[in-house]
Image 1 (spheres, helix red, strand yellow):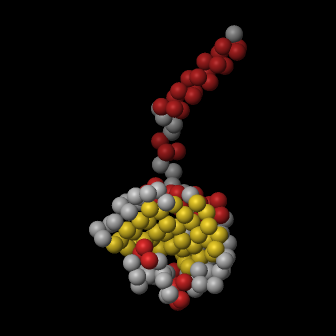
Image 2: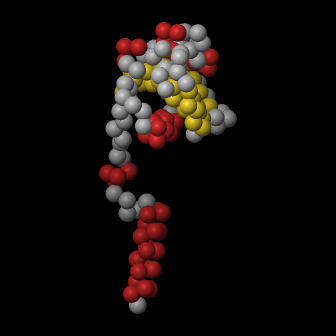
Image 3: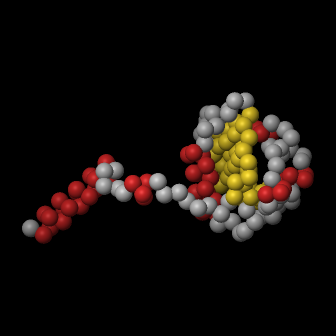
Length: 146
């Protein structure tokens, strides 16, 4: 009898969770408080390509940064490319002088302050995060496919 009641309770719980019926509303709308602070955003070609600039001076937690990038991807309205660039300080955050898809090219001043870049191509599904141990100009990259 107890076993049947347990199975019934678990089945009901599973179905209600699957349907989303019993999940509290507050839990669905919970927003993560990320340590990466937004600076500004810019779009090219009527929102086709979007670059969002952030800054963070602390030590990266790789798993947390990956989750942040996944959230940025999920929330993005970019039609083609999304770039999330994390700088060391808000005053150093700036857009490249080239089209976004060309990156920062030879812009040493900007590259010396880039700590991480996330790129997502909505058209073909490419999704990659590059974290630099010091900075983009002189650091060693760690590449993570997302």
